[in-house]
Image (cartoon, rainbow, N blue to C red; front, side, top):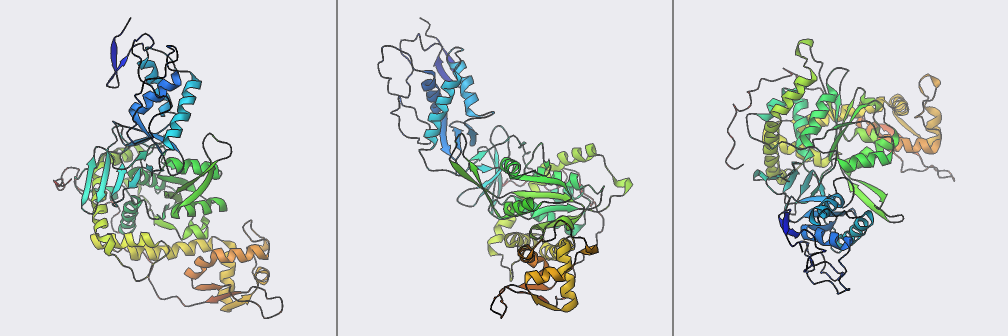
Length: 551
């Protein structure tokens, strides 16, 4: 009788339990509920004439020795290693617990291979164990705990993370919150405090000081998971480096081997992309279909998608998420009105031929400075968290939470990013309105008559498309015309035209009326400050201030 043992994952296991005189204890279905430590029922199996436990029973026992099982708030079961990183592993799929258990089973039981049916039965039992406790939050790249500490997953195999509070930031060995990973994620280098990381970052971007400071505030806000984030949109002519700049920004927040994505073809493709990344970039956007424009608006404020539950035919789960989005475009007028109010539009300047760099040079420079840039950004984030509770604004724009972040950054850095953002937002709204033929025609009508009152059908008769040919976006009937005006109301208001649809006609038909009125806008300067040098002089890495002992 071979009774030798060998260590497996640090635990001595029998080489052949079928020949052992003392078979390993197994779960007989009378185990305690999931306690978060994956305890295993150690009661001996029922005497069944010496028959060894089934492979499914052994698999469940192996799993409960090594993992605890949880259900996420979106209805997905996960396993978390008891002695390992605080990472939620899917039960099925590539690099999931199922594959790990199959390998562990073969190592533990002298090369025995668990059948597919045994693995499926074990997964069903483990899913039931995960459901035995209340759902828990499972974060993607960025999360927060009950005390408000922001936690950023470095994405490394050892499970390290960065925690940020008003008192500073730290790299911790084990995340205090539960994270999941996806194939679209890449590791993030550990941040360091070496030199002026913000100036180093600006040295790679061909944008003026005002645009860069707004970009820094956007990067800070991108690590705050509980607020809406405007869509970072790089605009400029061909050859201004829009795609490279957007890719660098996404790889600062949420590194990915595919930081730039193509425009999704439908809701399902979008849900797949959004589920796998905290930050993503849609590259080279020329036109946006209405469904995608609406979907991106929802992703800014917090989208909800009803999907079929995994491995079921009739159950559903609700995927609720908000994301950090970036886009590149040449023409801001191609963006719909609702989305235009949720953009942070930054212009990239034309690069002189003698200042151009190859993609390889730019990528090498970015990788060299990225740890220092992250250190400076986390430093600023901690300072913003310290002053943010005391920031009060006299009036709040559409993206109110982001406006407070801008005000906090201004207070810490003595900048004027909030004023610059509000001025630029008005310009973006005007550009978007010019890109809508129907909206431009309505604006021209009101500019001509001062105040216009009538039904949606009458409005459709009065306004004429350019050249007398109706473009595809032109409303086809009165109902669509009325809805279009409602959607355009924020953009019209930005150029001094108010929309009132609360009044009714005085005849017996009581038709709903549209009252469009031109108002006088206050005088304001929306021009950007002088650009100065596009690339500031920076010190080499390591020649700035020393890292603080606090970090």
